[in-house]
Image 1 (spheres, rainbow, N blue to C red):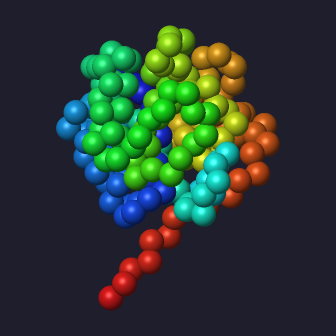
Image 2 (cartoon, rainbow, N blue to C red):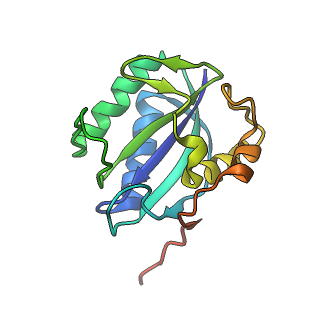
Length: 167
């Protein structure tokens, strides 16, 4: 099954956190078929001065959706993410992994909603997703990623990450 996962980090060595996430996904989830560039993004709906590095990857996996979710959440927790099921506030984190799409499946369970319910409102998801698969059709809205990006009203800043090389 082809899936899309959002990788993010806004604490510590953000680039290394993305790299560790890629390694984990390759070893535990499946083959990484495609990946976007890294994007530096203004925090979305959270009070933080720490900007995120974000990336979208396309993965071929044999995992079912709930097994995938458990693996991703375990990895986040190993790297310090604290979850509070009753909190509606987003928090800074070393690693943030979100399942954006699981093929064209629609999943709406108590612990997993796919497609990700806010992806159409987030340029930090749509821009890298558009880079790697602009014609992918959202199975609920029946619109391409390119169309969703064009219609998105998100005003948060998203720019290509240009890593500074220190000699």
